[in-house]
Image (cartoon, rainbow, N blue to C red; front, side, top):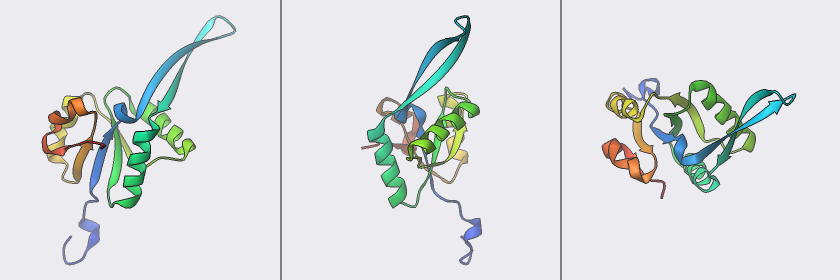
Length: 133
């Protein structure tokens, strides 16, 4: 912020991985008993999602949903399912190739305050690692 100008200020952002809030189940259904159709069902961890949602409404942070194993189209489907359920605290979504790719980009993103992920991967993020509890 320069002399009270907020247009140059970055909103503080927290990244949340999809592994923490959703489990994806793939089922194969057959159309006309011959053609296989793949259907993906998402089940949400409502306890973690509720905690993140309440934290997002009470703080000045912007939340971004990141994934290592989904592409951008699947992330759009996931955010649509979150919107449908009524609890979507995420404004942005980003698909990364791997965990190493995310860790490598963290020093070049000054707006990122932290990364919320599973406890067994928190040390990979260094000082950006945040726990849900």
